[in-house]
Length: 247
Image (cartoon, rainbow, N blue to C red; front, side, top):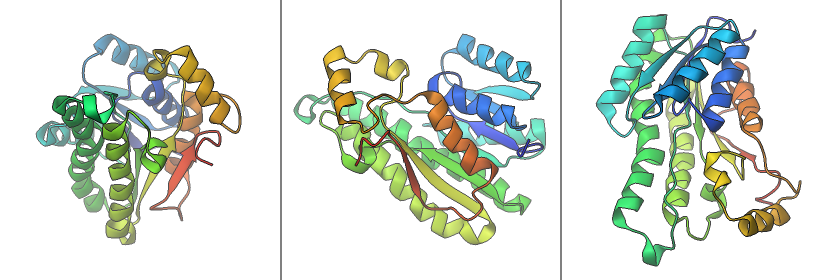
């Protein structure tokens, strides 16, 4: 129980990778704040599973593209649990299309959620983390697309590349205060976001993965747990969780 007494906030924590991260942190003793925006039933189910592990948790509905809502979420977490130690920026969306066909609104919603949402949550949590003077962990979920680019995902790849650069910059700013900032770059992970991909595209993707298979949300959650519970001398780095896709 390395995270006993620690408080973690996970954005987009009600389903998929986010839920796996929530359960991994709770299973290691952390108190968890589950952020969601729309699916309250899924959030309630995630909270029930947290309590089933004997851990404490709370739900908070917030739109991470709005700074004031992120600030309210951080304040609510601290009011409820007394502190905050770990922020996992996981929430993300996709609106894929070739650039020639990409709508401006689909560019905006992806960049606002996947990149500005990370900025908003980090900005909101920074002052409390610095005030506590006990270090902290910020873990941003990027994507292999942010490292290699991907046809039909100019908006998504650009946003995730921005998250990677942002993470490195913030790591330099606050490292001397004992707060680490790292990014994870998942590849093809079996979630709702990949379920709707054509079978032909899935087969092609598996052929490009060294391990020959897709990852699971638990694979990402294990990396989050590694960075959250230890990894004291790792900051400003990007860990690829892609089965060798980016080789």
